[in-house]
Length: 332
Ligand code: NAD
Ligand code: UD1
Image (cartoon, rainbow, N blue to C red; front, side):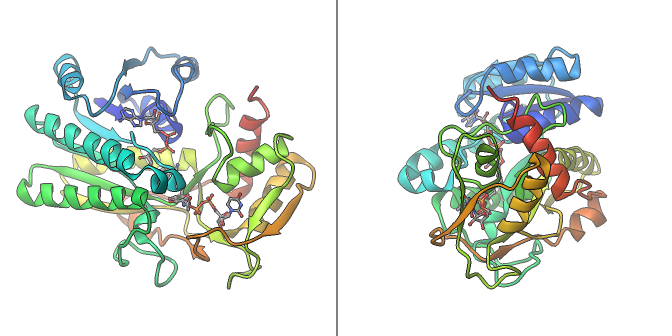
């Protein structure tokens, strides 16, 4: 089965490519290298001992998409390609609307031309905005609080409208919670440019001596220890969720929506503790002001994905810290 993986050289896409190959699928990657590097392709080929078909280009380029659909017999699509930095989306919103929404529309149009109707979309827990209660299930109220989040929300509505117009589609919308960690080989992982925004890449750079101390954003939230709580999920568990979603599409499921999380929340201090254990030394941190726009607690109710997909995240917070550190310490 030929699966077109947009953004397949990125963080989650690259881990999913490995799982696809391990499960007998044939991934075909398109990526514009806007937030990735061609060396990831070599690493993926080394990891899987397979030649992987790669097209360098933009998903908004419909001519290129048509060329790919003509040359490869595409059965289904996993659409990871997109811009994902919340802060940046506030600074340059048009780039986010253009890249994320245009790429999805171009892809859906070309899929329709070639009568390919199976589509997996990378959504995010960000579509729940500031949740009314935790754990968050798929029926919770939606509402994004920044342009990045709104691109995800709009695309979800576009997919729902499209499905209403044509029931031939089988679409899985996957709402990821906080993906962290890396492949156990240490060959692929997340490589943020510049100063990381997210907690785990920041903590691993402190562990690596690239940054002096961790800034803990807020100590007075109404949580277990006053620091923010999130549902961290190992990226390899998340990647496996995509294989289960593809299998679900084979059952002609229509449009389905799943949370992909562990169902457990960890505080910032608990993450630092797990990381300190993996590194073998206490990592320095300081409490600073709350980060604007942050919420106290966000974690999933993962029961729907378990019931309907058989999805269950297996890896613990210690596995996430260990694999992240194994990757980080090998980055030159
Ligand atoms: P990433 O930036 O590592 O990967 C995205 C890849 O897509 C990159 O390789 C980039 O070069 C490519 N790309 C971007 N726009 C493109 C375009 N127009 N044409 C071709 N290639 C393009 O991000 P990631 O963390 O792997 O995230 C993958 C998807 O999952 C994104 O849609 C993101 O919004 C979503 N998501 C990520 C997280 C997270 O925390 N990482 C959480 C929830 C949802
Ligand atoms: C971020 C994104 C969100 C995205 C999610 C998953 C923002 C505002 N939101 O959410 O859209 O879906 O990632 O990738 O960027 N923290 C610190 N110090 C740091 C960094 C973070 O204390 O240096 C704290 C935060 O306050 C939060 C927790 O760590 O409590 C996790 O933060 P982060 O990794 O940025 O993820 P989210 O805020 O959940």
